[in-house]
View 1 (tube, rainbow, N blue to C red):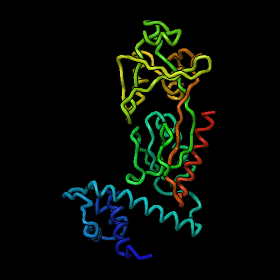
View 2: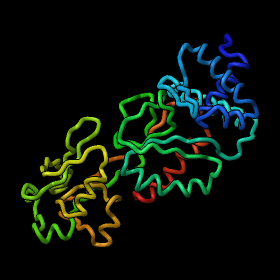
View 3: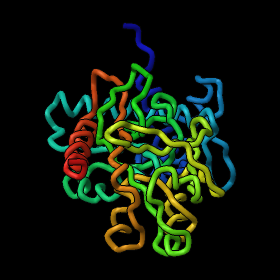
View 4: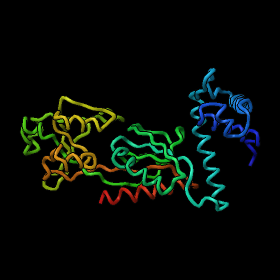
Length: 306
């Protein structure tokens, strides 16, 4: 194999990543034990080699350009894999370490992922976790994520999908609303109530409500004066304040139901669910921190889904 990088170029990449993480040449130099001028020269060499600007420089700070951000994510991931490979070969990685980057949708992040992270950190204190909370589909290669949680199985054959759970759906409303408007007794009654809508970020389409009728699945299109997009927790907030009916995941509202802040409706037609998957790229070498977190999250979620 022909050499692509010499020792100076590899060192320049390390200093570039450090400068990007520290958002400055001086703090990067302090950590690396070199001068700020040496860091600046290393970055300049990289920019000359690549033919692009990596940083926008001002008198007070530096900021990654769009090209610099893309290059940084790739370099950071590559350096982390080199460290993991060396530790694995030498037997020095007895515990997972390093940065773990996860993308998760709003409801799953707040009600499943984030509550579990302190337990993960207690077990593996050398792993730092960066969580991107959004319903937007991310690009693993371009954005440098290790894992993603999504509400549907991917069509991308380059990704491994592990089902975390089938999350049960439940129809709810606030007691104040039900005192004013009455309780729906049948699915046909939904047409006479304001049904709070959620638009899928990926398509802009409204999500149908899922029910059972005599054991047969039935998808129902509903209507109402309120629509939220991107953040599904918004529809629950509206329901809590008496805006109408909403169908959402039971794990989001289980405490509201226990306190009586929300009331479950039409339970005889309930029981439908939507899946959540843990996604990560196919790779010969999956870092120890990623393997450890996958096992941890599967362990944490499955008892809740049982």
